Length: 170
Image (cartoon, rainbow, N blue to C red; front, side):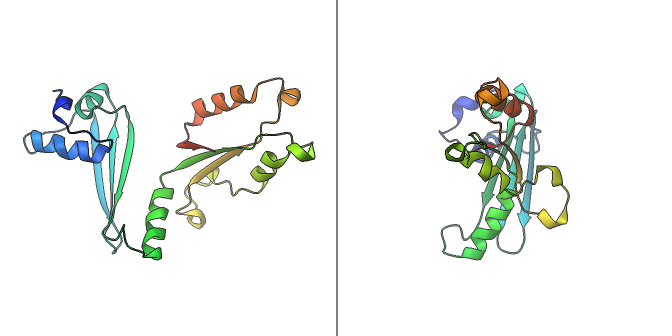
């Protein structure tokens, strides 16, 4: 069933899911869509994870396959720093970041990128460690320059992005 034309305009998979539920009979399964909702801690923070894992799911929600995370909270507009920190921690657990330190580490005026990479807290390989719980998965590379590698930096980065699929490239 393709009812995407009846949706109001939104980019949030959560809102699309709500509209789809309203237009379908109760208890009907969504083909190719998995939905998990979790209330987090005592402060009214709720996380909804929608995974679209098939073409049928794409058709139902009008979004490409992927994982869509929505965080909602009672005090989002407030000036409560601890609440915003809690929300940031929840979001960070879901992110995988890739940092690329551009430049030539052997030439002082061009060494900033590689120096930054040396000072990052790399966590991608530490999944499951209690000490880094709440930190995003961080991977990093200082690929050097073409004179050192014989390859364009863009080619190197493209290969890594295709392999590890980070949520953000910095």
